[in-house]
Image 1 (cartoon, rainbow, N blue to C red):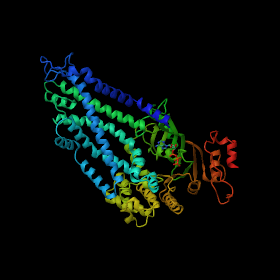
Image 2: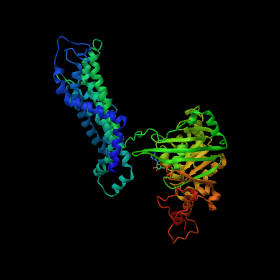
Image 3: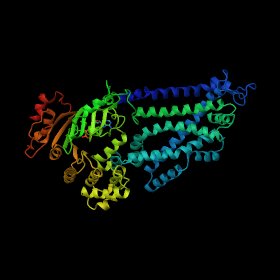
Image 4: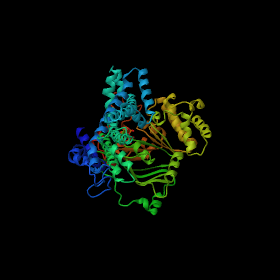
Length: 609
Ligand SMILES: Nc1ncnc2c1ncn2[C@@H]1O[C@H](COP(=O)(O)OP(=O)(O)OP(=O)(O)O)[C@@H](O)[C@H]1O
């Protein structure tokens, strides 16, 4: 675990962002520590013969109105500018985090009051609060630190509260509460460690923001007062003479921007190192194509030949996931197709790559994962060739095609429906997005579709939110949403796993009815052999990212599976004749089926015996 985290830090620090952040921080640190020692004298030395001079070899950024070297002053000002930004951010962040966690510790009513207070404070622009507070605290560095620190508090409190609320609903927090763990212990032991990552990342970005806030305050004459000077004060002095000598404002301006970028890059690096934002893998591309077929129109035509009767054709599809140790391929070059109107099942153990394959085929796999294929074609339109969209196919056209001709039904309908929107609004959406219907017409069609999937009192249900529906109804809502277009294919990813047995039957029967009524093909992903063999006419078997078997259901049930893994999978399914006094056959983890259909190792015999 420790070495994994060390590897992640090493990879983050060695990325271009990490290197830039480290170099930037080193420059800022050296200037802050050594600046006043090395350039302190030069920064305060006035040269009455060189007042407001433009850049010269002796004064690279010219001199100010008192004849002092602007570059030396900028370097010396680093210490005060950075220290003040760090102090204000530290104060604001600590107070903000404590304030944001407070609602979790206080009784419900008091907690709501606290939330209302920081929500109220956040409604005011940060700079306005800063100016208001600095007028109260008085001019000078201490007043500026307090004013900027306090203005950071509401935003940080809100961020902390939002992050804490998202963790608060998790099962482990509920378990801790059931065990009688006190409120503050739950907050500090269970919630805070789980939100620390994003808070730390935001902290470094906040330091960059604070630097700019100090510059703004000094620019308004409210921050640091002479003889002290920071970048903001220098900016304000320089801008007064910008038409006479622009270089005097340029040097502190560049310093503020560079320091701001440095802290932001540092935040990005910490995010990658702590896993909050994984970032791109160190190796840019998992695959190297000797020749990108996408550029070859003849190759496209040749590849498309023979796919007309297919609603989905997938050739050599691969998905790669970036990990600390390089690229991991959960889908290793699979090829399959679904004919128009066909019922195909995809089975395999958990983690075999079923969902990822189908999501990748539907173009739903996102960065940082990478997808490539010799060809993915849906409804006669090539979607992917190599790692890109084939030339000539527009993203808009593909989006419209997928929006109207492909329906997806996911395992957990609660997380695939937006809890904040009414069911009818969500079902109607494809109607006015892709179907060219008015909102009213789309709503009416949505209600008809809810009736089609046998939702009782569809008009009333359309006005309800997802949490007011049962699990089976939510699943039917997802199917109804797919029916707003004229789907050629429904990809159902474990649509019945989260439902009880009777509701499972209802949902399967709705899917079957939809297939019969519309002629849509169905690609049903499941680890339940009974569900797949009950509905589908052909079965695809996935094992460790590979498609190891593709055969008609009748042959599968007749014991004609050729691959040892499929036979092992079938052997592990109980039936009415199974002797319940004997332990069920299991497929041990790590069993080697790689030798393919001809393998007849001892392991297999053990499973099948
Ligand atoms: N977004 C992702 N980021 C990283 N790894 C992923 C991601 N999605 C899937 N994987 C990995 O890819 C592998 C295949 O996942 P997939 O969801 O396709 O499995 P599955 O066969 O559908 O399993 P299950 O039946 O449990 O849903 C797993 O090892 C999983 O951890």
